[in-house]
Image (cartoon, rainbow, N blue to C red; front, side, top):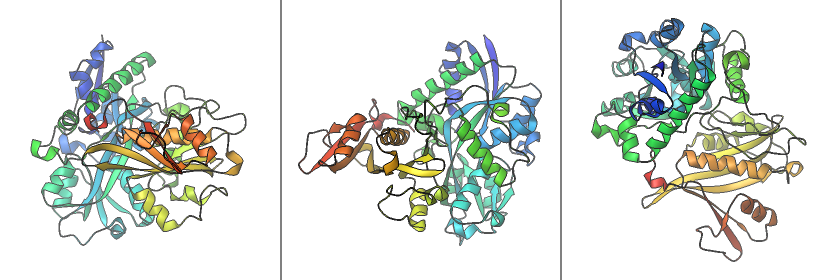
Amino acid sequence: MRTIRMQGDSNAHDRPWRVAVEQGFFADEGLDVEYHEDNPKGVAGRVENFPERWKESQLQQGAIEVYPVCEWGAIERVHTLGRGRIIGLDATVRTGAIMVRAHSPITTLGDLRNVPVAVTWHAGTFYAAIEALEAAGVPFAEIALVHANDRLDTLLSGKAVAAALMEPLVSRAAEAGCRKIANLRWRGGIVLGDDVDDETADKLMRALNRAVQWLRQNEDRARDELLRDLEPGLRRDGLLPELVGVKGYQRGEFQDKVDWMMQHGFLNEAPAYEEVVRGSEISPRTLPRCRHPAIRVPCDPVDATAMTVDIKVLRRGDETILMNVAPDVFDNPLDVDLTREFLGDARHHIVVALDGGLVVGFASGVHYVHPDKPPELWINEVGLAATHRSRGLGKALLQALFEVGRAHRCARAWVLTYRNNVAAVALYSSVGGTEGADGSGPADALVGYSFRLMETPAASLGF
């Protein structure tokens, strides 16, 4: 049995690794995974210079074979340190928050212009805080991040005005009276040593995805496992990572991050995909590239002989993408402030089709909850440029939006359209829509379609 030594990144975000050990999922693959949850130096090990941190130095010395780290950090470490490669995006979307003390005058991200914000240098909170602040209109030159080995202590002691935190620190800060002013989210990458073969890499990823499914089966179980570091009384309101499963790291996703890091001066030169990422990617001639930090969308093929189109789930900070839109896609000209508000709202979602950087289609929706029903996804609009209709793009956009709904544990999606809208009726039928928004049958002038997104009732899932 092959022994793989793993060093954790964040306890809550890395729980699928621990679950895969405890439930025997790695053992079922013939692997003996030694899971090291935290570095033995504790807070003292979170030094500013990342090559001197515990897990990075351990991989360099051959003392561990694998570690997860934020997506940006995975690129930076492999490129800079020259050992190991990324085998995929990790099983969870990391979640965090920017927090301030109870009586701080800071109420919005915009108030943090030139104000010290404690982070771990060149780690997930560092990069995610920059993205959030820029999306709120704070210029990069006026973002004042400071490294802190102990971010919570730095916040509570007043050494910094704000801090970017993950669990269990978010809940501990809230217990101490701190206020949340923004949520953060980002994806992790899995860095694997060069001496581990591809077959073993595949076994690791299969076992991790089994752990994700096991955690999804029960919300109480997921909270108890993912927030194990919190006292039981704090787990109910703790900030859960999103369980999305391990995904392959596609060239487009990689290039998006590299371009952003180069623009901000975090890389001296742009690394090549093949130098940093292990394994093959899906060809864009058979599958449009569907990029999102949380989701790899398994879209149906688009007619690639006629065009090469990317399907991208937009998020906070992607406002500029919607500045280049083909005619007839939206009903009205886009409003900058409304666009920023839409992308900054965690319950609003939009997926776009990009042809050479031009937005040629979109699908938008809202996921919502109700006290007596599982979460659902309402499909607001689907729009396509006249030049790109009848080519399968509408179907690909809807499938991408459905995947967003699944990531937010929506059991069902639904949409309304006019019965005389022949194109819309054909589209919704083609992706499995059942006539009747509640599944009960046809309406009169309006017709609804519902789409089952999950086999397991959403109320029993843990995310």
